[in-house]
Image (cartoon, rainbow, N blue to C red; front, side, top):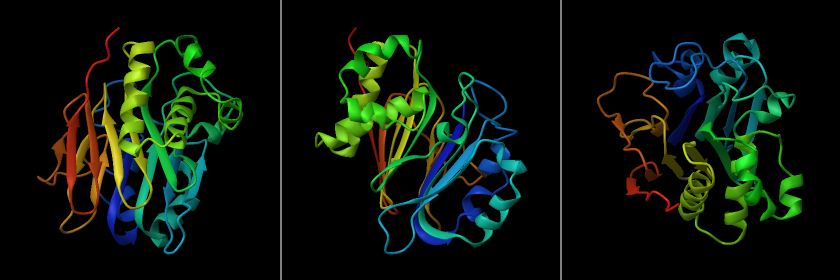
Length: 251
């Protein structure tokens, strides 16, 4: 169920992370090595990145498979950034929302992605939807579980939660409402990356040299890759990584 990746560090072409490594995200779209649900991520892809001096990220998203998009190959070669978030998608259910359902989702300086699935969506999350402001629900980019998870995170951020607390609170709330959900989340503002490991694989690799990367699976055989324990919140910047255990919600 999808593969995603976020990176922060020295400026470099986005292809240095997404295309050039032996097991890069482009390859993970058709041959993931550690995906626990689904086999091919051909239901769209997206990449978001930050240009120097502009806090609002740019995005490039398509509804088709990443390997079939010749324009992306050119973008990956020439677009340079210090931070990015990208994903390849294996849809949970069929949708007419096309590329609108593809991560990264965005608001203000944020880029967001969800790898996994919300059990029983949308029935199990109806009470949570009732607690969101109407304008936030109407602003959802798509009618998929990932877009709804982003709405929950956005609501917590708007209420003043620090980003780590916003992610952790969203995950534990969803896990209580929809037990068995897989909730690996990625969030970046271009300077740091926050992530949750909850029900699926997640790894990180520190910089020196190169960027700090958080990914569903390693994109090469570098020994610096470290698997993140399940039920963990990660916070990373170009030099440091912090891991904090997340508690199972009481039912």
